[in-house]
Each structure stands twice: as structure tokens, then as C-alpha cells.
Length: 529
Ligand code: TNX
Image (cartoon, rainbow, N blue to C red; front, side):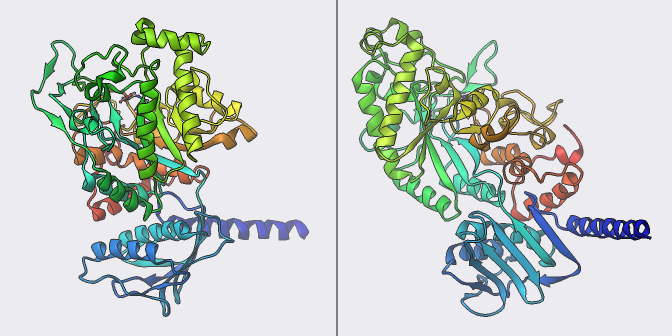
């Protein structure tokens, strides 16, 4: 008898689970929310007349949501907002995880409780996806959600090609809809210095323009386009963008490349080089031997002065100092560098880079900030407090995490969104190389190779948009979408990913992209990889 009862309860349980799963599948949100329990039927209809009821003075997320909805509904007026009434109610509660939210939908309306304003914002992003893709019909039920990683990053190289203020804002709009909360802004490189620094106007006067740009991959015979190219952000524009991002709960991490990838700065200020050599803003892609001199004290003074202005502009705790791909040819021949190596008792040029990085880190720490750099900062002997961005595979990140350094994983073979999306490359135009289809991003485990507490040092994952071959916003979007959706599940829903439902959910996401007017690549939807 007992056996029979057990069997019956098991069958009932299985049926119920199947039912819940079937119901949950009706909800297509990306990244997948952590917990979804929908009622079998019924929905609350959101229209342009629905009221947003704001408690806790959380007006900012409400205003952003209302503006998005206004665009969506194509209506003349913003949705009404007030402290009382029915509709979409939002408030915070410290019992909910900081960036998390709980959403309850019933005849009463939609209630979103965020762990913070950011949590409300993410709840509203979820709601927005549902409204846009389900004609405003939000199914009755309950969602509880929170991110896996605290650092959910996307990078943007605006040096190789420049993208203006409106483009960057649009980029931010796309990111936050995927619940990304860090923009790693690659502002300086060999091919252009893009941020105004008041103390050194030459950096943008001279360093933001190159004479021309390499055509194609530059394989034999090399050709250039003969067209001057440039652009930069004034400090006022930088503040505008930082503020725009902050209102969307996104931190912008500025990157000032040092001591390599700095030929544009050397063009502007030749005394930054070992021999004060005269060089052009670079017109070719790759790694140049023209790097900053790490021997002269004037270089350190320069870097500190630049960073002081950067710190003033960016509230981000992390400041990125680059550190990647710095050939040491010039340093080997340089009397200043050799003298510094001797005076500091260093073991050679690698250690000299370690010295420079450690000194800059101390400077940032003294000003209340933390340093992050590409994984080359490990080569010269990294301090225990630096955050490491692992790009040359995952080895650097694993090594750093085991030592106790914080790590952002962004291995080239999985996270370089400037790489091709299909094997055949048909219809993709010219890109740098590589091959990263949607599926490859989706199945990535950023914790790979690490166990237990070591994993706690992986603070996040990031994808990168290097712009050597990406010249306009349409191409940026096509390279970003839909792969960003895969990355968003890696970052936010790391342990809630579902290979079986992703394709169907992506069809809904595609509708969302269409409704937002964002360009996206067709390959994944065509079954091409
Ligand atoms: C490597 S990733 C670079 C960039 C290039 C990129 C091209 C890294 C730290 N450095 O300078 O743009 O490859 O994919």
C-alpha cells in the first residue's frame, strides 16, 4: 500500500514538475532568471496608460523604464509616475540580494522589489523584455533573480576606430538590456589618443589624428587609404557618458594603455620615448616597438598627471592601465632604462615593466583606487592586490586566482567579439580572424580549471570589441548581437543556462532586438556556425 502511495505521489510530483517547466518555458527572458514560477494561465496587461508606482524615491529606474516604454509604445507621453495607485509598483528591500529582484505578477499588477535601485532596474529590464515580446501581456507568477558574477563586462575599443557620444550611449543601452554592469572603455592606443587631458593638450591635438589607415589585412602589397582619421572626447563629453552610464547602474572602467600600445602619445609628446624619437600616430595594426621609456622619471610624472585627471573623471574603483604587448627592444638599448634597472636592482627589462606597474598601482591605491591590467602584468611579478584580466587564454587567470588575485576572465578564443562568427565567413565582411560562434560563447565555463575557494577570485567575465576592422556602429552591433546574449547568460545566469531552451528563447530575443531597432547577425538564427 505504502509503495503504491509513494508511486502515486511520485507520478503527481513528476506531472507537477513537468507542468511548472512547461509554464516556465512560456517565459523567454535572457539572461535566464534564477527562479521562475508562473501560474498556469492569466496575465496582467501593461499599456502606455499603466501607472508606475514608486516607493523609496526610486525615481531613476522608473524614469529610464518609462522612457524605454515610450519608445516602445511610440506614444507621445511618458507613462504616469506617482507614489500611490495600481500598476507597476517598485520598491527596494535589503532582504533581496543587492543587484537582485523579486517580481510578482497578479491581477493587482506587477510588483518589483529590488535589493537596491540597481536590482529594481534589472527587474524592469526583465519586465521590458516580456512587455515588448508578449504584446504587454505579463504572465501571472513569481520570479526571483540575481546575478552570478558581480563584474559583468563588455569592452569597447574606440582608439582603432572612433565612436562618438551617441554611439557610446547606444552601446550602453544595448549592454544594460543584457544586464551588463561594466563598460571597459579602451581610450588610448597606438592608432589614436581619444580622451582630452587638460595638462597635455598635445595628446588630443596631435595624438588623436592619424594620417591614414591600413587597407585590408596588410598582407603583400601593403596599402593605405590616404584619408586622415581621428576623433576624441572632451572631458565634458566623458562626464556626460559616465553620467549616462551611472544612471543605468553601469560603471565605466577607463583604460589608459602603458607602457606599450602608446605610439599616439609618443607622437604627441616625443619625450615619452627612450630616445625622443619622432614617430607617427600609427597607421598599421599590430604591436609596435615604439613604447614609453620606463627609465626616465618624466614618464612617471606624465602617467601620474594623466591618471589624476582620469580619476577625477571616472568614479570607478578599478582603473585599467593596459600593460599588454610591450616589446622591450627600445628599453634594451636605452641608457635611462638600463640605469633604472641598475638603480632599482631589477633583473632585466621584464622586471622593469613590473616595477612600472607596481609603482602605478601604488599611486592609484594612494588615491583610493584599484588597478586592473591585462595578464602581462603577471610577467614582471604582480603585487597581491592587482586585478588581472586574463586574455592570453585562461592560464594567467588561473595562476592569478590561485595566488589570491582577483581575476576577470576574457580569454581570446571565447571572448573576442571582433572574431568571425561562422566557419565559412560568408557574408561577414573583412575581420581580424578567429572563429567564435554563439554556441562557443554559450558553453563557456569561466571557472574552468579552478576548484572551491579559488573560484571566488573570478569576479567576472567579459567580452571584447577590438575595432581594427570595425568602423561603424552597425558593424559593432552585428558583432555584438546575438553573441552578447550568450555572454549575458554566462555572466548573470552562469548556473541556470539551458542548452535545450536557448534556441527558442533566442527567437524571442531576436524579436526584442527588432523592436529595439538594434542590428544583429543572422548566422545563429540561420543555423550557421
Ligand atoms: C590583442 S587583447 C590586443 C589588442 C588587439 C587584439 C585584436 C590585448 C590585450 N591586446 O591590442 O586589438 O588582440 O584582437
